[in-house]
Length: 231
Image 1 (cartoon, rainbow, N blue to C red):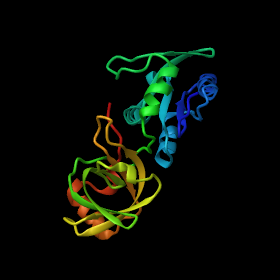
Image 2: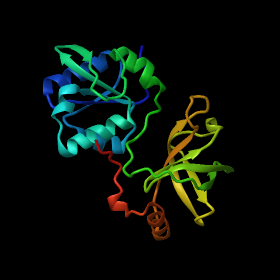
Image 3: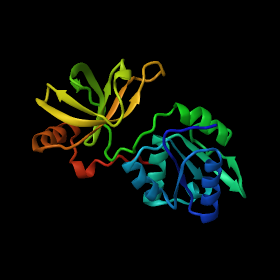
């Protein structure tokens, strides 16, 4: 039985296809959230945690403008299975130049999605900024550093991530900038997965001094620093 901690986003412009994709996931004991377009999926992914994306290939091909940019952004952030639905049968499809994908829905759910730590879509672009930090968590302090930083949050490197829990508060102190940031732990990458271990956090609020410092670091104003990729 496939058990995923968070839902899978389903996107198709066609009502019948969207229903078929959603039903296939439910039949595999997976929660599915149906979306009529990519922008709708983006809004949901900005608000909650998701385990992956199942999308109708013709929908990707038909997407244009903003929709196409959002589709590319979502596929870059979440494990993605591109399929063509023939009745209730889902046939995985690859696109020229796209990353290698699973050969079946079962492989996608049991192999790829189970190894992916659910996450929200970032509202702001990540910047590769390394700043020494002190993580203050449950009465203790831990030395760390940022691997990336944005207006909305950061990824802080930590080898012993088992001490952290998602949806709990951590104070990120940045001595170089002279301020503390209150944040919530959104996701955790444990040690041993051939990836940098650490925690992904979202900032609760930014005061004027923080906004000024970030503007200088990012060389961009908050409202223009959207986390959308280009095709």
